[in-house]
Length: 116
Image 1 (tube, rainbow, N blue to C red):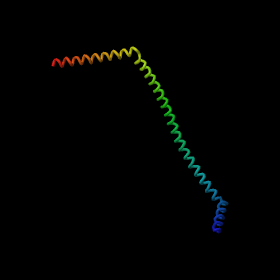
Image 2 (cartoon, rainbow, N blue to C red):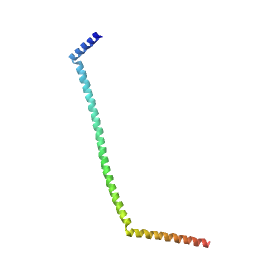
Image 3 (spheres, rainbow, N blue to C red):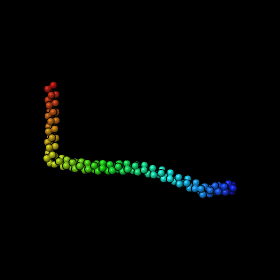
Image 4 (cartoon, helix red, strand yellow):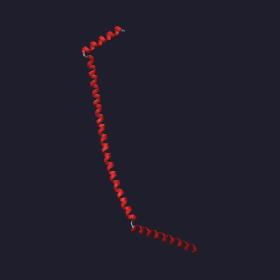
């Protein structure tokens, strides 16, 4: 075992002197750098797409808020109109006319029944 270990150490020392081990490590490091740079480019592309989606969603949200405010303002104006005395009087008149028509209709039905 000792002799094998000595042989291995000697072989490694010769490879280091010859520059073989260092070259392999440099090649692996360069390959890894290339892979990581390619991966970084992919992430940048995905990030740009996500940033665009966030911007579009922000604009959409702002428009929705503006539309909501406009709808609330219209609802408030409509509520004011419906609460006005004039409008309340109109509703009462319409209800009274409806009630009078129902009474007239029921009276006519009774008259028709008595004629039959």
